[in-house]
View 1 (cartoon, one colour):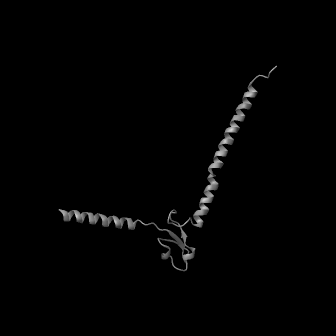
View 2: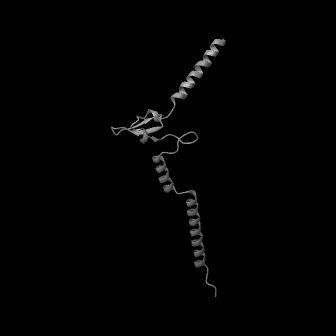
View 3: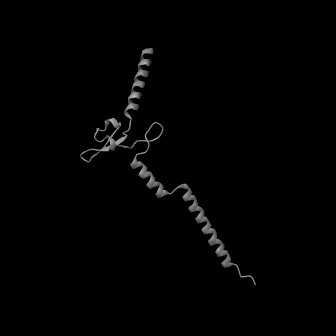
Length: 115
């Protein structure tokens, strides 16, 4: 009984390690001499002639490189498209002020003039 439990635990741990190790995502993209873009896990996997031009495309955070130039440019364009939170808030306030101004103008037009 104990041997079968030990064996089952060993098989479970071994398969778990294999699954985790196999789930690694590609991190670097480079373009070869043929003009085809290729993706590899490690920068050392990039041929030496293209290594300086390889671009990080993986996640960022603690222990990971900063955003690549392409990712930084994409983020900049998205920020411009969406606008910052402060710009959105200012736009909402401006809309509310304009609606209030229109409401007051309609009230003044509908009231009879004082005699």
